[in-house]
Image 1 (spheres, helix red, strand yellow):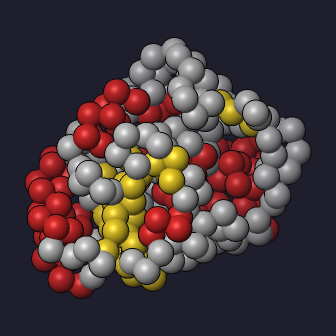
Image 2: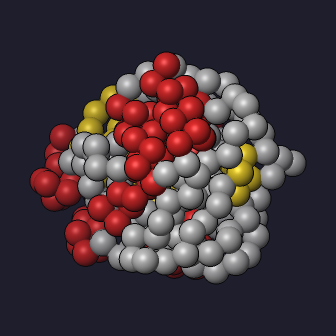
Length: 246
């Protein structure tokens, strides 16, 4: 299995996870643009932690094909310049244009961590739910979303976590709908989907930059097979009433 070491902004301790992620120290790693654009064996530079923490290194063992000129340029800038500014520019470039998503939603998990295929979502309207347990607006919105989902079995939620440790993710996941799926914590798909849909919390700006469309919480209705966006539901701005638009 290819060795992956991903951005460590969402991790707090040194330990391997079940998804093959090796965590170094708490910090911010290089821009996610390189995750989908690198063809060569280039390494990402590290980004400083948002509150003065240590640095976290990133290395990709399995390379992905380049996906558009913006992503390729972003990867080159991040790999060559070796500065936080270059890495932030790479993230912004990769998330703003030239991006394709050949892998759809990527691997998914059920409530107990078992891998689930996208066929589990067949025939349903699917929304990615970008949220973090630390986010007060998410804490207020999630119960409303659970209530809404209980009345709409024809819909499905896929949780995209902005939690800062695997333990926090597990606790948060346990409080969500039992039938909701999630993108594995620390996986490449987690970072790729945030960059693609430009939805993340301000505490993640050191990884993804400032060019976001929406913060937390956010719902994005997607085609589960292709990952293509069908509708943005800006729950951060509109709150529970946005569910009427789904």
